Length: 120
Image (cartoon, rainbow, N blue to C red; front, top):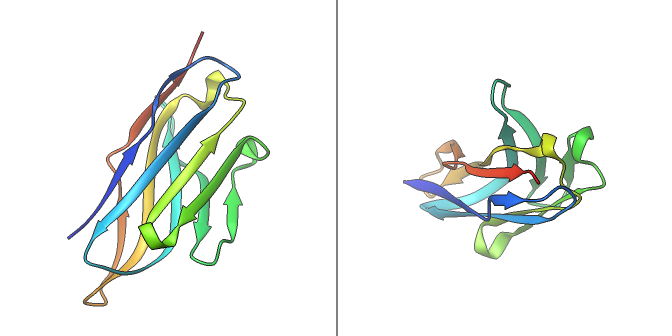
């Protein structure tokens, strides 16, 4: 059993910052890619940013230069630092991990989601 637990969402004014965290726990052998997705009301879920175990990153064009993804491999934790937030960043943010369990089963695991609201 593997689970991802997110934290750090909330209400912030435009131009403000938030930091999301996501910790993976359970029977984990290795985690390849960890990422953050978001889903706004009435829209499809989209990739925000991802990071490999080696530190290679990928960002959606809409967040480049404003968001930074990082991870602590020892803690199986991924972070998303969000700066210069805009109302259009309002969404439920989901953590995701592609991993192998200790029984070498491949899993794609999702967190429960955390709401980020950018509003004055």
